Length: 129
Image (cartoon, rainbow, N blue to C red; front, side, top):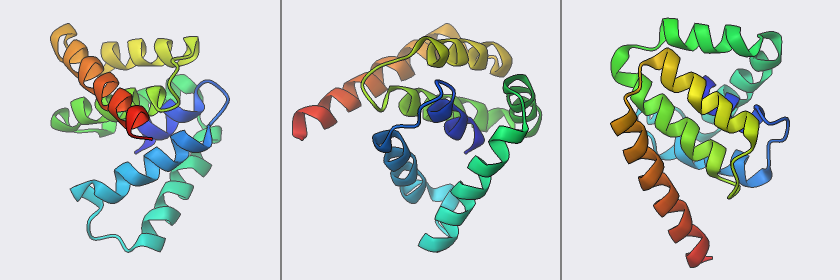
């Protein structure tokens, strides 16, 4: 969740569509299925409140240290979706995704697959609107 929250705030502007997408992803994720709706929103707010207290590098390192290997790919995929949720990828977001790939050990093949899939999903979402 911290990686996704960082992805929507790294460019200095958390659009409403990015925040709403993060909430929707959390509601659908089985990791959070035991949370009541108000508890989940409070959890998201508590993560976001902690973000300003850590530097960008500290946040990346803390995520890399605490996430188990099998969740690093999931965190990267969430970050890609959050960064692209508003339809554009700011330079700061692109840099953050590059840094995540490096610190999490994300392979180029996995990264390309995630990027392609998420861009296709977002295109479909925009066409449906």
